[in-house]
Length: 134
Image 1 (spheres, rainbow, N blue to C red):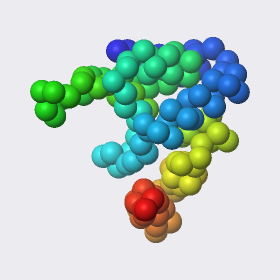
Image 2: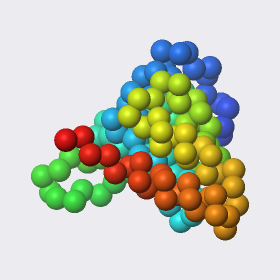
Image 3: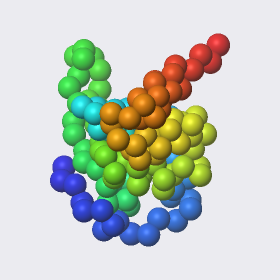
């Protein structure tokens, strides 16, 4: 599906931002892919992802390959780079589980990739993703 240019989505209500944050807390991921920030939400229901893309004007949706024949087809909304930071800043006040990861990710992009601060924040992001809930 094609990406809408940033800013073309309608103004988001606080309720919509909270809904997106809840979905992201459960199904989202923050990572660095090819030295670039990538924020993703994965779902078996592309309608939700399409609505998020339309509301925010950010990202693109792709169908993911099934790992096993019995698995459902899944879709992924991917938002890269500065668009990913814009997305995280939009939902940050409503995040619970991924709030700390989002805060780190919005800081990482401010530093040059070769800097010690950038590398330190990348390590902290990886550490933050390893939470033991037991």
